[in-house]
Image (cartoon, rainbow, N blue to C red; front, side, top):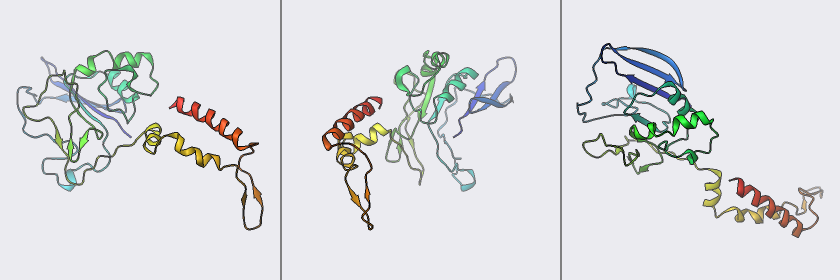
Length: 223
């Protein structure tokens, strides 16, 4: 996984600057004489592809959440965003939204409100409806779109969403559906040579259920 960040820094009296970061580290920079007029309107915007969508100019692979900010990010902000990992897809509004342990100075940079208020638009695989990718910036942010902000995924593009262990267990009916499987672990099993095999040495089935129930409660509390 790589996090690529491209920052455009506007300078009034000299050439503007382009900086490229990979995984939170500056790898390249240079001056840019091309003037960017923020008053211009653009009728098309492509992510991971050119306008023609020809095979030589289309990104092939998995793409995580995409963010475009209306303000130039500083190195500390970019590094802190990288600490959130490839699965982050929120809007930098709540400190408790991520399970990843972050240093306090990173939390301060991420959740001081500056990042959230400067999101121009953002897309991620979880916010999709069929081939429509929904724009997910905070509702209170001013929209930069003239028409609908939602994007259409090109042909053969698919949204892939992974789920946490807690969600996976919940989808099959909860941890209780595994009880019958665990309860059979101490059953006597005979192979072709009639050799007895005991997986768990629990004295009786009632003791096993009590141990299993206590372990399950602890496991569920961790999730």
